[in-house]
Image (cartoon, rainbow, N blue to C red; front, side):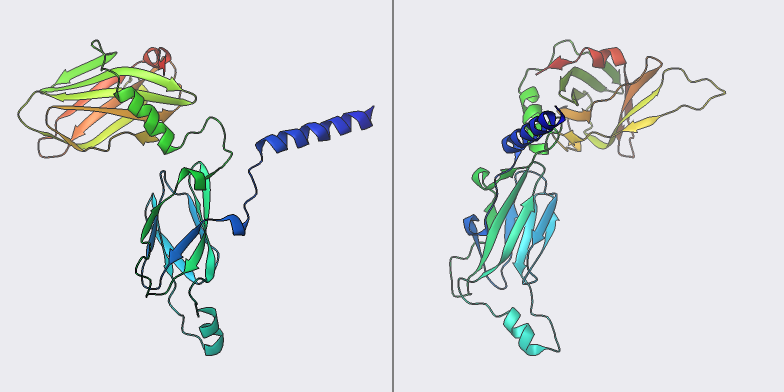
Length: 289
């Protein structure tokens, strides 16, 4: 009986692995990237890059931004073993000089780096990673990449703003509205609008989110827990009249004795500040997309 159960367990494990395993990638099947001495190749990713690997010391690179990997042929090092150094960095047209691996939030892409001499006038200087070059990485199904979060946020922003917002605060010619709350998997999306009825434009110093006690007693300290969005659709820091944005948080909870506090703070010298309190019941009534 134990032998039968053991055999059945192995079969189920193999079946599950066969359904979820990522296809093997052979070097011979990798797409080619041409690279020339003295010219940097910029690899542009559709989502933030988590990791880059250059398989040989003939290549070097860095990440000038979260979505761009810069790769170039390394300079010849000064070495006491001149012959070894010269042979290692001696390239012929069409030579494969390494494998470039780029890992995003939800994919891995790999390329063969092919040497082209400087006489080649059609040297590539930048490429966009194409969908057919990406192999998906199996992550927790509850985790979304920034690209996916942006898509969800764009779906929300294309909806008309609610005529009757869930919450609204007005002060000093400013208005902050919580238009709606949405939930997708383990993420909470806050749809917010900021309005300025004054003739002075508003320069945002900070928009702070925190969970705080509803009642603050003199004998106790206010316990404030700062919350940072994992994504926001628009990083805009300035608006004249109206500004609508989507702020995304990983799922959170807080008791009825606490509330979410949203503070919009202006840069000095004016320093206009407006606060909004959000009850947990407002979060519990979140819509789904």
